[in-house]
Structure formats: C-alpha cells, structure tokens
Figure 1 (tube, rainbow, N blue to C red):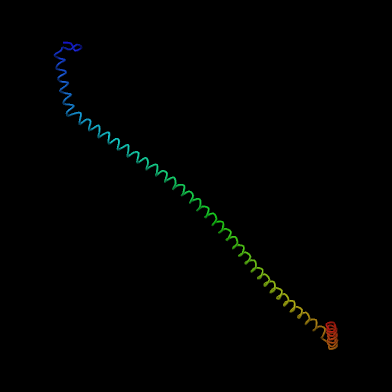
Figure 2: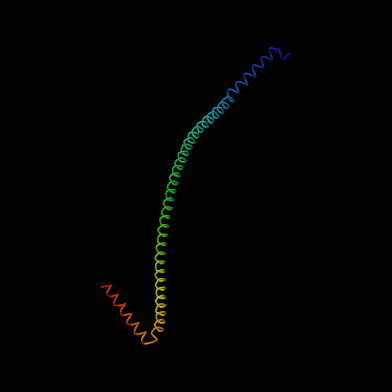
Length: 169
C-alpha cells in the first residue's frame, strides 16, 4: 500500500470520513465559528465607529482648546496693555505729585529763608542802633562834660533840625 497512489478502498473510506466530518462541522462547528467571526466583526466595526467618534470629539476639543488658548492670549495681551497704561499713569501722577511737593517745599523754604533774613536784619539793625546809641552816649558824655559844649551841641542840633524840616517842606 502506497500513500502516493492509494487503493480504492482507502479512497472510499477517506471520502466517507471526510463527508462525515464535513457534515458534523457544517452542522455544529461552522455556525459557531461564523457566529464568533460575525461577533468579532461587529465588535471591530463598533470599535472603529467609536474610534471615529472619539477622533471627531478629540478634533473638536483640540479646536476648542486652540480657540480658548487664542482668547486667553488676547485677554493676556489686553491685561498687559491695561497694566502698562496704568503703570504709566501712576508714574506720571507720582511725578506730578513729587513736583508739586518739591515746589511746596521750595516755597516754604523760601518763606522761611525770607523770614529768617528779615529776623536777622532786625537783629542787626537793633544791634547797630544799640551800638549807635552807646557810641553817641559815650561821645555826648565826653563832649557835654562842660556846659558850654552842651549848649553849643544843642543849638547845633536845633539848626540841623530846622534845615531838615525846611527841606521836607
């Protein structure tokens, strides 16, 4: 018996067993296998459909995210611009207030300096007047030590007073 050229009896039994096996597989095996393949196919189809939906949602979310980022950048830019303008306004206001304060301080200082100067001049005038009176007193004591000198001095003063009043008239 050769396997390359089988006998007719072997061939007969092989066909019978093949038919019986094919019948059993067709009756019981193929429906289970095809239902499993169909279930797997529907699961894969559902997964692909879900994946497409998720991809569509993700692209919508990415687009929404990019819009939100762009809006945030615009808002950040606007806030930065407002902050810069506010800073400039505050700096200008501080400069103006500083100038006003400096001018006020300078004016007060000038007033105090003028008052101090006037006070110093009054003190100097008072001292000069006191010194003048003291010197005049010493001179008059010396010159008026005699009655003749006193009389002569008084008449001289009367003449000078008369001349001064004539000039003023």
